[in-house]
Amino acid sequence: MQEKELSALLNDERFLNYCLGRNAADVSFWESKLQFDPDLADQIEPVRQAVVFLAHESSMREKERAYELLRQKISAANAASLQRRRLYRTIGYSAAIMLLALLSGYYFYLDRGGANTIQPGGNAAMLTLADGRRVQLSDEQEGVVAQGDKMMYSDGTPVAGPGPGIRSTTNTIETPRGGQYHIVLEDGSKIWLNAASKLIYPTHFQHNIRMVELVGEAYFEVAEDRTRPFRIRAGRQEITVLGTAFGVSAYSDEPAIRTTLVSGKVRIDYRKKPDSDRLFRDSVFLQPDQQSILRGDSIVIHPVDAAKVTAWVKGIFSFDNESLESIMQKISRWYDVEVVFAGADKNSRFWGGVSRYESVDEVLRRLQATGDVQFKIEGRRVMATK
Amino acid sequence: MNPTKNGRDLKTAWDAFISDANEQAFYCLYGHYYDYFSFLGGKRNQRADRVADSINDLFLYVYENRSRLLNVRDHHNYLVTAFIRKLFRKVPVERELSGWLSEEHVYPSPEVQLIQQSMDDELKCALKKLIGQLPAKQHRMIYQKFYLGMSYREISLSNRVSEKTAYNTIYIAVDKLRNLLGKTVHYILSFIALYLPLYMLMLIAEGVSAVASQFENQ
Image 1 (spheres, rainbow over the protein chains, first blue to last red):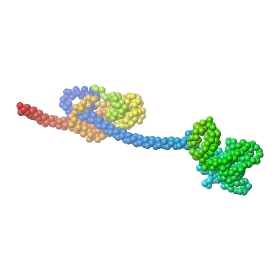
Image 2 (cartoon, rainbow over the protein chains, first blue to last red):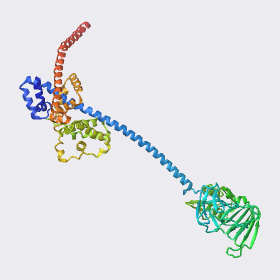
Image 3 (spheres, chains in turn orange, green):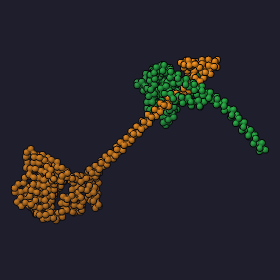
Image 4 (cartoon, chains in turn cyan, red):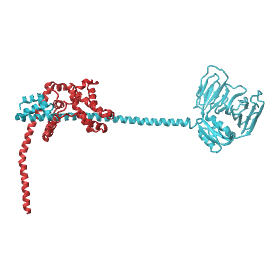
């Protein structure tokens, strides 16, 4: 076959259609043509075969080549998605760990201050300065020291700078329910304020007397100064001391005012009736380990273990033949819970001690162990049943 | 003329791929649509490499988003529409599509596959080797010319070469193959001419020895 003939064939769409069977008319045209020209048919056949083979082979190879590229893309994408999946997994793990941490943190939070476990009180107090400013005292400090006009924390950190002006001559330190605070007055006397208590003291003591006022419970260690007696006004009684340690409990929601002497000597002046205008006509003296109870129009003195009565200063609830009512009142103040007596005998007596820094559950469990009382906690309410 | 292979006939392959990521099925779809889309792209004067890229982009997407394609009912329409969108970067106008949707002119008659199948294996090997030596661009032009039946003009546009280059490329390839075919045919014939008598002799010799051993046994 001449080159011219081959190129003519390749330019002939009808021939190519015949080769590849694309067009019925072209196929029959060439078939009939070759039928009558066997020589041409012999020459044409290799060309036809070549065309057909090229068609299929090229198609296959084109696809294979393109598909190989696709495979590479897919595996690259898979690798990327694997990396992405690894990243997601890492993120997932981190998220899970963080969630876990958050949950456990939340759990601890619940554990500390949450509904199920009622936690004890801590250092908390509000200081009202003579100039009228109110300062929330730090719960990280244990106490404050008064030095004239200035107040500072026990570690020397100032509580508040100089005020705008003097409105009164007294400062007031007040603890909330569940709070306690310690204060050292300018004469060096130390006072521990129990929960829900208030101490009013002058910015400067007078030259002949050191006078403070107390509502609630406090423990005093009065610095000795024979020239200036220390006097505490608590409700309708006044306690006058020279230098001594004693506890006073004068809550307005309790009918009795108790004064317990640890050491030294105190004089208690009192009014027989709460509304009496007669000032402190009657008086009694207390000896160490004696407690006076002013209730109604009479004052009773009885021996006690003073260390136990004032043990709260050292962080201990100590009950020595104490009524359930009194105990629950202390618990109520320190844990800031409401106590409801639902069948329990308010007058049943208890002995024993437990740390004030235990959770309320533990304290109640100890009381419950006696078998005389049962407790149920609902939120911040403690039900005392028989 | 036998009906040509139709994309819709590949529903089984599509389903097999979608349901269990069967790669054979995937390749079957790929192969069919590679031809079809190359044809469409060529007819619309799109560059062959861009067409090939679009095809691969589409099938990469299909491969990676198998589970999302569960809802595709008409895979053929889906693939064609997606391909055209990829190639032209726009939503195809229905009217524009309608002229393309026929696959009738894409595929060579299945009949011609028989021709290929009847060919001698050794010859096929030689031809494959030759085709394998062609540069990618020439190879693609052969594919476009013979398999897809594109005109030289279409091929030249598709490959950004002159029509003359397109023609020459194809001429050279066919000429080479034709020569090879001629030689191989002679080679096979001479092989038969040489070995057939020897083979006959061998058979006769075996037959004689068998007869001889029978005599010995008696």
